Every structure is written in structure tokens, then in C-alpha cells.
Amino acid sequence: MSYQKVITTEQAPAAIGPYSQAIKVDNLIYTSGQIPIDPATGQIVAGGAAEQAARVMANLQAVLAAAGASLKDVVKTTLFIKDMNDFGTINEVYGRYFPQDPPARSCVEVARLPKDVLVEIEAVAVVAPK
Figure 1 (cartoon, rainbow, N blue to C red):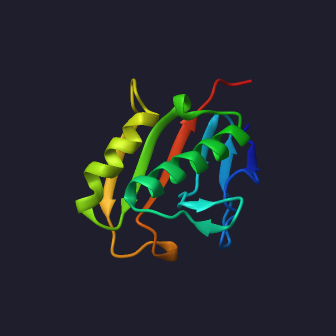
Figure 2: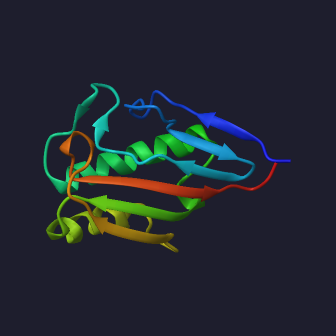
């Protein structure tokens, strides 16, 4: 029997539309795309692609933690970046969070992201069944 649970945490930015930060179904966790908003201030972090990517990863970690998971449980990510010229910078920051056995990943350049940020990342994680 499948069980769906809405995941929310104040340690990551609140949803800015009609969606949840994440949904957990049985042992699968699907996060919404995280953007570089500091949950303490509600503002986009200062700086460029590196700073934004680091904040996105911190937000992703917070949502996963609220669902009982960590980055080690992530099996797939999708990166949306505004400018493919930032790929190397974002990739370097991203790599720090997945030093071993990184998940499968897709990365696409998009014309525009919410709040005109430079990067958005979503993830799928799998945790041990309870």
C-alpha cells in the first residue's frame, strides 16, 4: 500500500506557489526544485553561481533531512542552470556535496528560472523501508 506524505521544513525556503517542498511515497522522496533563497531572510543569496549553488545544495539537504534522508540517499538530480557558461562553477560546487558515488544527473540550460536565479536543483532519494 502506498503512503504519501508532504514534507515541509523551515530550514529551507517555503514554497512560492502551489507545491510542496517534497513528497515522500513509501521509501521514495521527490523534492521540488530548490533555488538559492536563504530561508532565514527570504532573500536570494548574494554572489554569483558558486554562492547560489552552495545555497541550493544547503536547501536541498534541509528538505531531505526533514524527510529522514541525506544527500547519500539521492539517486537522481536534475540541474537547471540559466547560463551554460556557469556549468564548470556549479559542477565544482555540486561535486563537493557528492564526493563519492554521485547520483545520476541531468543538467539543462533554461531561459529563465524563478526569481531570476542562476541555478535550481531537484532530487529523488531512496531511503530504507521502515
